[in-house]
Length: 195
Image (cartoon, rainbow, N blue to C red; front, side, top):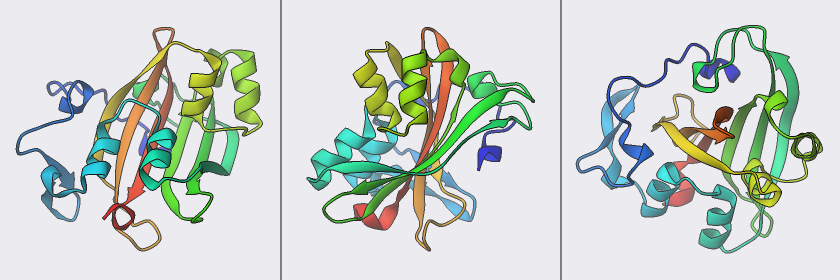
């Protein structure tokens, strides 16, 4: 999964409209399998999730009206096989990778899958310890730790592989902490869950 980020150049073909606005008249999302997907045809809440720069877990709890927990599927330290320009990772750099599901505790439904690449040497020790211990989601952890950060949406698209046999959309964003890109996250949302 980490290979989805390797050698992805920083966007230089003009501004990404989702970095500064949530509305793009006649906007579309590219699809590998055919015609672009008009953004206006997506469920409104899913459109909001794709462009938000806030904590997704909190938004999911408010929309689905149940507690949402993070089920960590995979978490390990690896050496990057290639560069990841979006967070300034070079081949051979050690990064933490984490894959998780965001699940409603009442319904037991999975609302999103998240995959993260983290430059763990750039986060404070207490943050790193809580992250390694899988206590809570990354967004909640950042908020609770009081770290000043901001999110920058890098890409929005249709997931090339289905999630549990369903069509899905994704957004990839990076989290900047102390002026440095530290965390890169792709969140994948199964479309049927939001209809």
